Image (cartoon, rainbow, N blue to C red; front, side, top):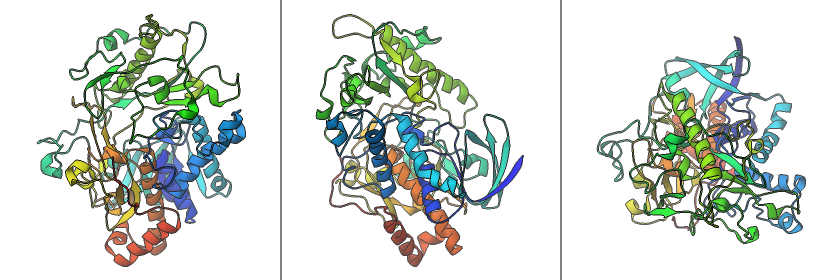
Length: 534
């Protein structure tokens, strides 16, 4: 085991971890960043999920560095990809012309841009990146984390890293149990939170489904894979509220809960320039080929792409049979989730109904070269819900739900450190719940949600902030995770500069005003203009 020291240790290189590193480095601090998978970027890259964003993302409501990431992805396409002249000139270039996001792109491009943003700090000797690596243990002294042991997955080599501040940017809040940090999982009770949509009794094992996404295209020939081991199980699988077998194009509508059958046509002949993603107006999921498309062949010069490329992240691959948090059977459930996704793909190839009355699309191919894997699935499962710290302030449904508040004007906090906006979007859960998908107000992010009730040098930097099972549904998306991580990085550096702990920044009006001013200068928006939620 080797011993290392850094000023700020960030465990987890998802969007929150990357944003935290950029902030701490910009503040002049030395950082060690660890990541379990080959790509930095988490849900945007290794999980292969195009960004879920609000309707005003091109104008306001994100941090300056998140905007730099988005524009960096577009610039990468303009300089490296054979775009048509019209596509190259499009200010709001959307390479996939998907309807889930105004920036649907190949995950490897996002990973390359993230690396580009971080590499100057690596060259300067102020950033060390350890990957693929995973935290395996931690030591604490009272209310402080003293060290974290990081294991390199390729070699088994371990590093015992001490740090002045430790940021947990892992997808599942892995450091929380390792450090004894107080946390919650699953669905809190109505008694605990006062939320109208919460159950009477807490359900810690009732968590949002994970999904193992994958990329596909469609070309001539027969590319049918071997029948997945668990195909027969998943072909017969049907939750009681689903309205059809999961291996179908039928599933509940998230907002109305009525049973809806989507279409799927790899031969669809749409105009990608005419597609505009706006979740406020249209969920965009009625034609699944277009919904999460990340490469629209018509936006590239003729012959450059044999086919569109599409990400499959549909309700039909939501895994409902068990949880992976604090569960000794987590690996079993992860493999079962992979089997569900492979079964869905095999069903698409062999049994899916076609518009011409036939069945199956044997020309579909898994594109592991797009996701960076040999088997064609994403490198990592899509994680919607994490362990969450018990925080000085917990954001609850009554804070941001349009129905609970009676209006959709922005939700404000005295200690705002950022902004976010997304519907409260909870996928079906391991406890048997259907969707909860209700209108949310644009919200500010309270600093209190980033401060653990006891620990003094550990900060959350992702989906593990002080939200509930319900409000996590609005906080879990790409730009909000980035904003949270960015603030955590700035906060750790600010506390080191002034020799104070994070709670003092919130409770001292002078320190809070100084910190908020710092964030504003760094391009972190603290307040919304006059907009209304949806």
